[in-house]
Amino acid sequence: MDDVASPLYHARGLAALRPDAAGEIILDQGLSRQPKILRIRVEDDGRITSTSGSTLDQGSSQNIGTGIEALIRRARDSLFEEELFHELLREVRAELLSFRVAVEDHIIRVPVEAHRAGRSHNSQQYILIDLVDRDDHQEAQSQSEELNKDPYSTTSFISPNCIVLALRILLTQTYRQRFRKRSQPPPPISEEKRSAPVHSILRPVIAYIQHAEATRGLHEFTSHVLKVLESAGVAARYAGRITTSAVSHLPFDEQSNQSSNKTPSMVEFLLSTVDGPLKAQATLSIPSYSSKQEYVIAIDTTTHFSAPTFGTLFHITPPQFNTSTTSGLAPGPEPLRYHNFDSLTKYITYLVCRAVASSNVIPTVSSTADSNERPQGWRLEDSGTDLRRVWMTEEKVRRLSVVWQDGGLIVVCAENGVRAKMVGWWDGGKNTERKQTTETLREVVESCGQLVV
Image (cartoon, rainbow, N blue to C red; front, top):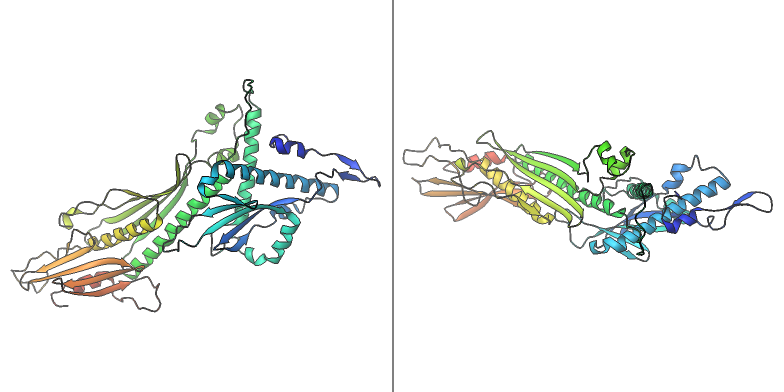
């Protein structure tokens, strides 16, 4: 650690062992002071919901030793934690202030962007990072053990212990980078003073948390959509996949030739990918009653946390609707990109309603129809979510509208543009006070397709 630590902490890593009056070996007073530890807390709407544990003691309690060995290990761990917090402060002040990451009273506050449908914009979640005395942290931890009974709390997927572990691993990656740089020939001598580089330690962690929050919010929303469609008798399917794009996809031997003669280890290769974009793919498939085709809604989620782009982008590709059964309706809209999660969910529900309406376009003829009745069954209106059927002999025009409202699927029937009533409502059992329609959506459409309802 001493060889690769930053210059500020390189000298502090050296200490003298001296004998005391009794002949016992003691550690230099400078390194035997109160040890420090990095603390991670999760704040949700002003309330601390979880905090990191004293993982340094838990991981080394069996081999920590006693006496002088324990003091040396504590001093080494404390110096590592202090350098880690120092590097985090440098990174925040140099690169992350524009991303709403702030430093208040020696506490780093990292906002977590919420991707939840219908979540209040006033609610806010933060990750708090600070450096505290290890003994005080252990005492406070013992008084609030109930916060960490489950590291993956039901109120948040963020695990403080995982975050602090990731930060420590990323600091060791900076040690590898410094060692590799020192192994190379030095640059030409110059009168200009070279500033110490700012390492990306907190940035990859923020990017992963934001990406995980986005994919988790999308999964929760699509899971609710599936429950609603299932309660309506629509056998929809959902599939998701998460991928990480590496900065370099070169093989180990080719990548190593660009940096040094040594082949990088698997750990170095994996850590070298943390600055790349994070990607996730999801598809929502809705079957059609009129044909064997499926209406597939594809959603790609990409998170960038480096210039020139920043944040999470949702790229949604709508299904191609069959123009032969939609009365000349044009194919689905062009792929769109969304940064706002609420706008994304509104567009998804529109596509779901459109797919459900399109799947019920079947050119059937009523058994009671005479030769003067137009034998066309339900036809799709230009809106994409409205069905229309005409009885020429009775001069009747009946319309069905498939609407997503209040987290549920609604079918509204109107006749001759005058009478309108809700004939179907499904919400997946979300509303326990209101009973949803017992018939399936297909049965409701067939019932409304009769001349006399």
